[in-house]
Image (cartoon, rainbow, N blue to C red; front, side, top):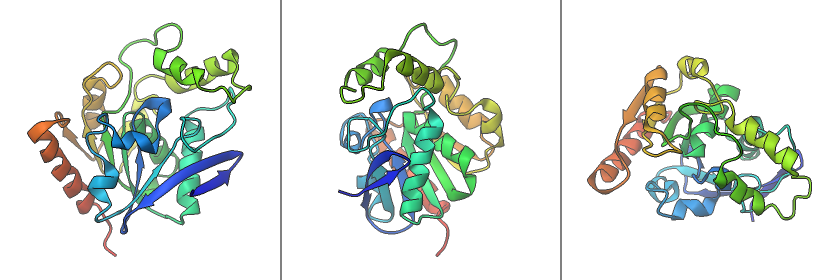
Length: 244
């Protein structure tokens, strides 16, 4: 099993195909694992779609229920995930890559663009998570469902989990970055719209409008529009792949 140790975390990843690298982040929120890519919740499956021409790197996020594990503290947040992602790139000696992320992957992408923009050639952001309006009281049911599975994390007390939840979701908008950062982001981005409460269409639309160098696909999840979106994503990645 390809794993690496980084700052107390064990990170599981896989590589598929050859060519310019694409680091892909699966949907499912804090349960984001490689296995999610093979489910219907992922209309575009990076391993299947991109590995014929690219080196596709996928990974289990820390404590998501897959092969990646890390201690949980009240100081954890988007920066913790970004450190994991950069550790994988460093371990694989990848200086520059594309990013593909669905759902929580959009926030992961923005964190990396903020931390080390020079490493990102282009990014595809599919139905990014975000919030319109104030944060609801308490913790989301999906987060609590994830927390119930942390049976081997005695350090994950209610107080720690409350702090983690606030760190991740209290900021609003795209959660990991604010609107001012998005307006300053120069990387070419392709945004595929969300259409439900967790992935609000207005968040996707505003993100595409704020990004200085963005394209937008308003419909893409099934049928003919899905096939068209797959081709457009491939064309977008090809356009921004550096020449060897």
